[in-house]
Length: 210
Image (cartoon, rainbow, N blue to C red; front, side, top):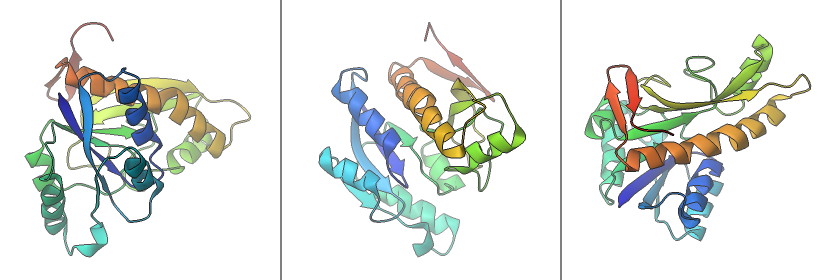
């Protein structure tokens, strides 16, 4: 059994996708041990409560520096067996102490085809605004391993979504979420649970078909 700890900051749509795929058997041999939210009052926290998943709150602003925040996050996660840490719309940067503690056991979903439209400040609706402003014809989502830099670790899976001429940032965000993020995040978790993901420097190797 692979135990997940899911980190969230907002509405929790990708958390819900994981919950649903576990419930329907798509993610066999996987369970969510706990959820950590970056602030109180998120709907992600409510989704966890409805699913009977324990949730803790750790706010970055409560800690004076990144090292103190890392220690608080490590302490929060110590309550659960964390075979894999999943950042599902989590907006706080994790520091080197946390990344080292869970090395090669942290993945993130980002709403663009990395390395496009990523980095500090490009989260939520902003990658979609940037994609439309740049005029790309294709965007999408990426699941990647996490290091101590924003949106930087080795790429695991990507899925493309065409940009329509009449798209708004909101319509593009919804379509990327539904057609890409909620597809490849559970898929990446399943591959990890099956032991089929290997890393070689910046590259990942996925064994077998996917």
